[in-house]
Image (cartoon, rainbow, N blue to C red; front, side, top):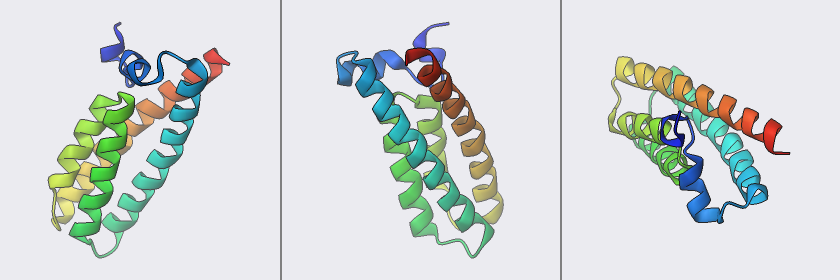
Length: 117
């Protein structure tokens, strides 16, 4: 399976880090933390009274961060989530897609960290 079919395209990340595995580890650790925090914020917004502007801003941040490390499927799901408004069913469906995609990214990162240290 090529990197582009993986939850994180390490070739993409390597273009920014020069392939430095230590830097890759640091970036992936930072992303994993940021991703968890952003998904938790989106979950909080979807449970309570949805604030469409905050939802879009958080989804936009997740989209940029995911695309930046090469987690393209997660970034694309965040781009779709960014388009949802106050529609409760749409935000809940978008959140479920984000949680599914982010779980795959987190598992990939955990495996990468385990095998690169």
